[in-house]
Length: 329
Image 1 (cartoon, rainbow, N blue to C red):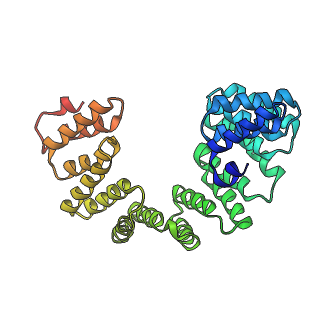
Image 2: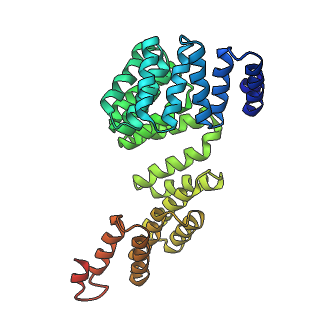
């Protein structure tokens, strides 16, 4: 357990648990603990085997075993079996919050059943109304799956009330505010995140810069996005892309194309980032380059409508070629 819990050296832990099993093959705890270590090494098959052996030895082993076993089945994409085992865990202990939360995640992530997902998230809040994590996870569900940002904001706010220094709750609420077009509230939360944990400063600069771009405050957007780049934000491609759009709106075409090219240097295979350069070519009326790029995008993914739409728009542009409406159509 020292290797597993303190050093996180799961291979060494497995060696010790295996030696313990060799000396005492009827000790259920050894199998449970080794199953946990196998799970931490993503060896799901061996993890399940150990959990099942643990149950053979002790059919009334701790409810956590059933929860972990269900998670393992979920990792194998055996969702029906995972659901069955989560139900077993809840039958053993109807107050075991982790099983409800994981079952809710299973419904929302893999079974496309938001109704039952919400019922289970509600149960976690009912069982532990003073635990901020329960409001956080339900808030994520409201935002990501239901797109009910008002409800998400309510849950994140309740979580913050219970745990005012939890950065994840502020991140969730700031993003929900942004998606709900409550931009000032969103910026206030991002600034609070920066205050709580300075490691988030590059992220905060990117997000605030993105909001200022969306609200057409271009000088502020340029300032914050440039700060994010200087601070080496971990995912610079979207920062350069948004900054490119800022320069494009400011009619600084030279700087715009520099930013779009930097984006493509970082992620050359991401078709979404080609759209920035494509928009640049259209707005600067470099139609030949734009058409070539459209066909490049179509070759990559002929089910994405963006390139077709822009291509049609180019052919419909009178400054391109007369009598090109047929191509546009």
